[in-house]
Length: 322
Image 1: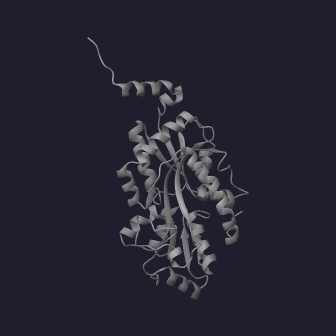
Image 2: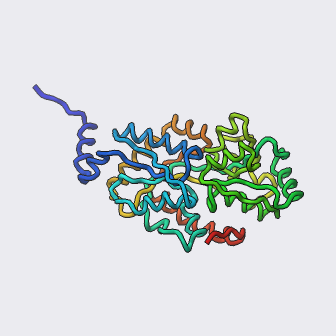
Image 3: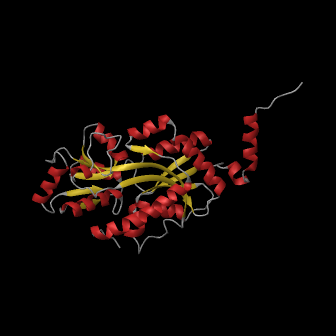
């Protein structure tokens, strides 16, 4: 009697045998994904991804919230963790920007001290206002700000992040003075606008979508060069008369420096597989983000490009922290 072994099974077996021992057994205990902001903001894509990795890798991937210091507390936790794959980090555009705004105090290097794993998604920032604010579009908001200089405030998810810079750059471009009020994450910033403690916020589309869909907050503009596929009826800031205005955000997964390539490859392949599924893209779109899923070097290059791009903009806008 003879048996035929499927060729696909043979290839899969050889692939496992070829992996270094750490990658063959990884993960054999829970993995934490450090999230450097408060829950309830733009964490929905991170939670979806953690659930997917838990299912596909047969081990718990747990979101560990560590808000504070504009996301640097969480990033520092990742940078100083063991390079064994059991502490990963969820990073945003603020990861690169912090190295400019906090040049004197940042406790790590945003490129050298991390191992990029995958660019997960891209997202626009959205200008949300409390419906009681007498503004129907961005132009009328700017007119209101000019009539009441220094009297209007905008909330952000933290000093120096994309939501903060979105507002400051509009101040600079439009010649207005809407005062920045930082919060420890997108969730608290949105809560402040819902309570009308602050009349408006610039926030990631992922955090904005539930309030827009519920009709509790009104979207006036998005920061990307093109309209968001999730918010096709909301004009861009460019369309409203500011052709040089563009701010985009992104989300990625990282590990500490020195993370073994085999573990990087294993986690990356699972992220890319999940993110590129049609139903995942639809779920992400419903959250206001565009699913990506990339090779590790794509995220690393994004950091380098962002640092070069933002440094002159931040200097011109006058945003300073250190």
